Amino acid sequence: MTEKMIVPLRGETTLTGWRLPTDMSQQEWMDAGRTLGRIERAVMWWIGDWWAYGEHRYGDRKAIVGAPEWTGPSYQTCMNAASVCRSFETSRRREVLSFKHHAEVASLPKSEADRLLTAAMPKPGDIDPQIPAMGLRNEVKQIRRAERVIELAAETERAAADLGGKRYNVICADPPWRFEPYSRGTGMDRAADNHYPTMTLEAIRDLAIPAADDCVLFLWTTAPMLRIATLMLLDAWDFEYRSAMVWVKNRAGTGYWFRNKFEPLLIAVRGDVPAPAPGQQWESVIEAPVAEHSAKPEIFLEMIEAYFPQLSKIELFRRGPARQGWDAWGNEAIGKAAE
Image (cartoon, rainbow, N blue to C red; front, top):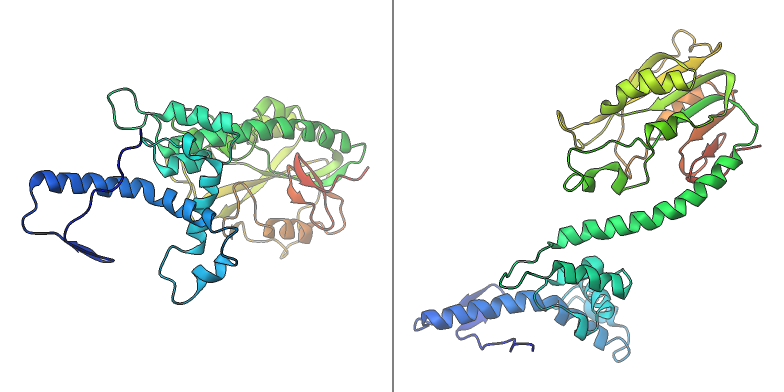
């Protein structure tokens, strides 16, 4: 049964404080604290239900709450709260869990959301949830990733068939390296696997890349994978290492020995591919801001184009539309490789 939400608060309350009465007993003070806790847990539910109530009653609510004289919750707060409230009818809301717990699972089907909320419930006699709200966020990420992996698996099969018989003189590859964290329980939230499907070294090694007999490879790697990329993958793909350049990022990431702030781009060749003419070489360090997870700055493709403007080019593991003048391949690429 839902306990009474409000015990009257004596004294003078304002938007910036509460002047408590001088004769408040310890019991009354404790009861007031419990009331404040219940208000804290309930206020987003109240806002959401209040906003949903006015949906078909009061016209343009955005104009109402956006007016200069409005002193209530912001439009975005109302929208966020109402979205969660609509996902959970009152009978499914768990009083012992926070609004944020519910918000983290609101996008899931009812049965899945209820399962996770039940798992997060405190043990009998405890008051703290077994799973914090951020823990539920990680659970949802894993569910979404599993769904996406199934979808991408089919896309990858189609993309592999699209390579056809064409071969390229220039390849830029950004493999989805799988790097095992020390702890899969605590480290996966920052691992690449939590942002996009990764591949084992064996799977990457066994790819039939569309390299011509004379081909230059620009291979993205990471500090932990440098040895594997240079000594194993290049050999498996039949390329010889030539040089490297570095992308220096505008913010640091994660790491065990250091917080990594760079990514290497290796250059390797097979056959006879000329190096840039003297005076045409770019500097080996490029500073560029970080975009979405794993996305590489386009300036590196501009550099490759400047080096080899006439040669056929393909980007492997491209994310999004193919760049003009390039073919693209990968389960997230938009625009297929030419036949």
